[in-house]
Image 1 (cartoon, rainbow, N blue to C red):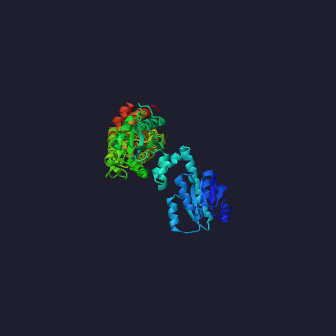
Image 2: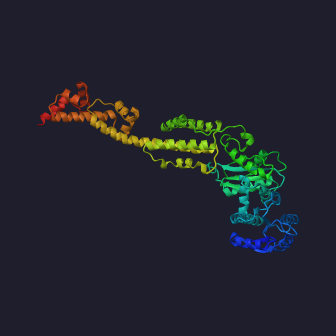
Length: 520
């Protein structure tokens, strides 16, 4: 419970105040009462209350003099709430100057006083945690400073509680480890290890003082640092920091915010460091980036031109590895040269994945079978340089190209059986390998090779055998003339039919029929 002292020269006012508010449920306990300022001074010495609720006009020592005396003589450190029946601007003005929590007019509004007490209770709790060095509150204070949510009067106290040196320029720097585990021959970095290295290097940079570490994620962290005396600029400090951090894997990038001359400007440094991160792909070759590098540079926030995706897909479908690699080079060169923002890069990569998956689905494939698709789709889970992202994209493109080729083979296998059935139904017509290839959207040479590989016979030999077998049946079962049979089985020239028949059967059609007759 927080201890409360009530000060008012009217006993009925103090009694009414006791009963008006549920003090205990709000975390307060009234430990003493005083009827004037002088008596209150002694009770503050004796009881060391956390909160003093006082009237202004009292005999011997009024409320404002009481507050002034307590602060000047440092008699405890209570917070004050003034309750007065006089709506005097000068009183309120002095109360603000003394740092009073609230100035409430009589008759007291119960809800207003309860709201004030809740706010005071939170403030007291925060002060107690600060005195105990509570890490959660330190983090809360740091977040409030960085985001600019902390009220101006509390900023100096928060800076002091966080151990920020007074009178020294500060800067927020974001450290980011990219491409963790991207190189197959390098050991994967350990998040705990690299942050320990970062703290060690930053402490050495600032004269042994451990820096404030602001967590962003496993591979990203912020540092709030005072400028070291031996360093000329924050860019130089960041470069020295980068060189000092020993990584087990990955690439360290640093983003430097604008310097903060006072704690009130810390949120600007934080915001500018985050803005600088938007240029990580536009200035992909630089390991340290600051506002000086990005000044005047506009970022592209649209997707890549459609023709790049069309050309890449065309190369993939034709399994032209060199052409696909050239288009990928062009895509990633565009990201850099046109200064693509990270969200525009992400949108373009997502579009590439969608385009490839649609093609795979159209070929009756399963995009879930592509391990590279999963890896590329999750690329934003860890920070990546353009080179690291390009390696993922290239692996995905290569795997998808191979898979498309396999799907084409499977599709062709299914088609070749349909083609065989087509030949068996239409061999009597004027058909050829070229005509059938056109009907099934295949290359004639490839179709011929696939037919031979599948059935062990060349297309023309298979077609000829069908026609001869049908001609033999007609010779056996009908009295059709030879030229009629030739036309029936697909030969426009009877002489050519007779020659092909003899080549297969080793006798002419006439001899074949005669031989059948002689056996009866």
